[in-house]
Length: 372
Image (cartoon, rainbow, N blue to C red):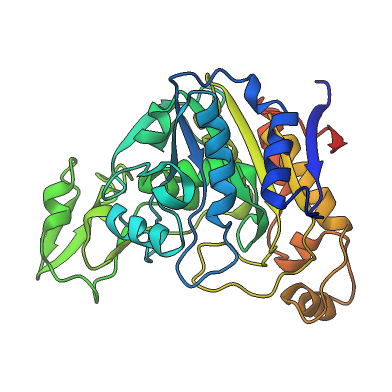
C-alpha cells in the first residue's frame, strides 16, 4: 500500500489568516471538496464534551466544516451517540442539553444536531463486519449509518484505556450505540447493581430474550439467555444495570478498529484532527487536566489510520509540559520512553488499534506529511 497524504497546518495566525480560515484552507487543500456533497446527507461526527470539561473542541471549528459542506450543497448535521457510562450524555435529551450548554447549537454551528442512536441509545443499525476477528456485526447509531457521507472532526488527546483518542476512537467508539459500546468495552454480559435497583421492571419488559426476572423486587439477569444487546442499560432509569467493563485494552482497541470499518465501509469519508488542548484524559470526563504537551496544529486526510499516526508522531516529538500529569508520570517511571501516551497511561497500547485497522484495510500507518 502506498503512503497516504496527511495535510497539516500550524496554529500561527495573522490579521490576514485566523485559525478558522486556516482550517478551511486545510480541508480544501486536502481535497474534501472532491467529495460529491450535492443533496447528500452528511454526518459530522464530533464529541460535544461532558459539561464541566473545557478541553473539547469549540463549536467554531465545526461551523467551518459544516459551511464548506453546505457550500457544496450537502445536507449536513452534527452527531454523536449516547454514552455507556452514567453522565450528562447518557440519553438524547440530556445529550442535547449538554451540547447546547457547551455551545453546540444550530446558531453557532449552522446546522442541526442529531443524536445518532436515538433517545435511549437503542436506535441502532446492525452492520456486518466480514473482516472482523472480534466483531461479526457492529451495532452503530442508525442516524450515522443513514448518512450518505461521513466526516470525523476529532479532538486529539490522551485516553485512559486506548492511549489516545483520535480519529479511530471518534469513529469506532463514538458511533457505536450503547450496545455497541458495551460490546467493545466488555467481554461479558451486563450486570445488575442490586443495591441501586428499585424493582420497577422496565428492564424485564424491554428484554426480548426473557433473560431478566425480578426476585424480591430486584432484577436478575440470566447470562445463559442474555445476548448482550444492552437495551436494559438504556432503559434503566436509576442506572442499576451496567456493563462488565472487563475487556483487555488491546482487544478493546481492535474491536474499535472493526467498528470503524463498519462505519466507513462503502461510502465517502474524510477526517480532521486538531492536536490542541491535549489533556491526559478523554473529553468524557467532567473535568480536564492541564495539557501534557503544547498545542501542535490541525491535520486532515482521507485516511484515518495515517491521520492518527501522524498526530501521534507529532505529539511524541513535542516537549512535555512541566507540572502536567505526564510530567508526574515520567518522574515516577524514571525517564521518558519517547511515547507520551504510553507514559501517561502505561497499561495502554495505542498502536494495537492502528495495526489492526491497517490489517483489516481501513488505511495505512505510512504517510506523507504535507504542510501548508
